[in-house]
Amino acid sequence: MSALELSVLEIARRVRSGDLVALDVAQECLQAIKRAAPLNAFLHVSEAQVLETAARIDARRARGEPMGPLAGAPIAIKDALCTRDAPTTAGSKILTRSATGAGWRPPYDATAVERLRRADALIVGKTNLDEFAMGSSNENSAFGPVLNPWDRTRVAGGSSGGSAAAVAAGLVPGAIGSDTGGSIRQPAALCGVVGVKPTYGRVSRYGLIAFASSLDQVGPLTYDTRSAAQVLEVIAGHDPLDSTSSTAPVGKYVDACGRDVAGLRIGVPEEYFQEGLNPEVERNVREAIDLLTDRGCHIQSVSMPHTRYGVATYYILATAEAASNLARYDGVRFGLRDEPHAGGVTAMYGATRDAGFGPEVKRRILLGTYVLSAGYYEAYYKKAQKVRTLVKRDFDSVFGQVDVLIAPTSPTPAFRLGEKTDDPLSMYLADVFTLPTSLAGVCALSVPCRPTEAVGAEPSLPVGLQLMAPAFCEERLFSLAATWEQMAPKASRLGPPPQLALKGVSPN
Image (cartoon, rainbow, N blue to C red; front, top):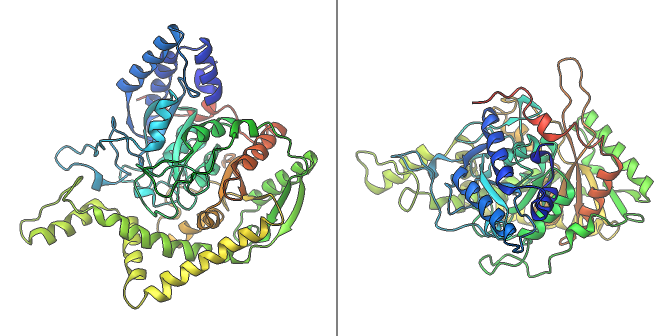
């Protein structure tokens, strides 16, 4: 059996016991990434560093020294998180140096990356993403789209498409993404893996390149729920470098995966089963809900009336914050600089931003600037903040009645490359079921349920089951998701990820 068919937890267990050699795991991982280059999941691979780290882990084990909970497990990092030993581009030309085309190299690690290193994970490289995490398909990357491992004519989802595709393709057993409005959960659903958006403040944002600071969160993507729980345990917790990180104790997430869910009250929000939901997605999600009753879960319908305003509210608030956060990319301090022959520093600012930002980023900067401008602030930004409060009150209200909410993650399976690029509104609606939880700051998880049926030339495609819980109640998500995996393993995956992953992909 290939080591890459094993979960993060199982690789780490076998490396600690000596049943696996970390250096062998690293070499196998690097070879798989090279073979899968056509997927475009990685923007940078840290070959020398990962081999060196693996050799150190093996030497420590030989000396009988203790090792971390992720010892020898390959983990990929979304290229929106800073890494001191690898370039960080955020999928944008503006974070490259014009003379060499090389990405900007931060002088520090993001806190989540630093904690992974301390846990003895193998940081294998940086994954592709929509530019500055702005997108739902990974087609907005300055370095080309990520292809879905299940069907390379389809998107991998966004913005953490590279991380999701790398896990689904069996290139790595785990990856880190960021989720602003669904950017972990939606690609996890479209690629058939587990993806977790923790509670806002549960994981430090220090070193995450900011898109929308009141919404951005860092979280894991893995083959299985227990591994996601372990990775979250490692990266979660208070960080004095992030003033928004919570001091609330980190839960025993791995232990939660073994808990009985009998008696758990599960709410099914009516507003998540409306027009626009793919019939097969709805059927498969409702089937999963019905099956959970066999474990003693109590299912009840609930209403969250302000869900309908989620998309509009998000795209006012997120773009406003993006316009502010992206003002720092001006060609002066780091990254790209475009110096026209005339016009001085003002012309340099404009030329740099015009050359460095892609169309979607420019669109969002313009939208954000507009809603913050004099005469429009009250009508748009201030009103959106009030609606955000109403969305949060919906969650507060239903969580007084139920313990967990369950719904589709995405309204459709993976759509075709180019299908929505000329229709921004249609693209934005791909996140209609993930945006509300981000606005409310609560935690959510996507786990695979039964995939669609293959019909003629149309392949079977993953479907995501979204679980949502109150703030800092991630343990409920893990216990329910792990129970679902135990109940319906055949329904929750199309096949072993490595066999699935490289089907039809040729070596370089």
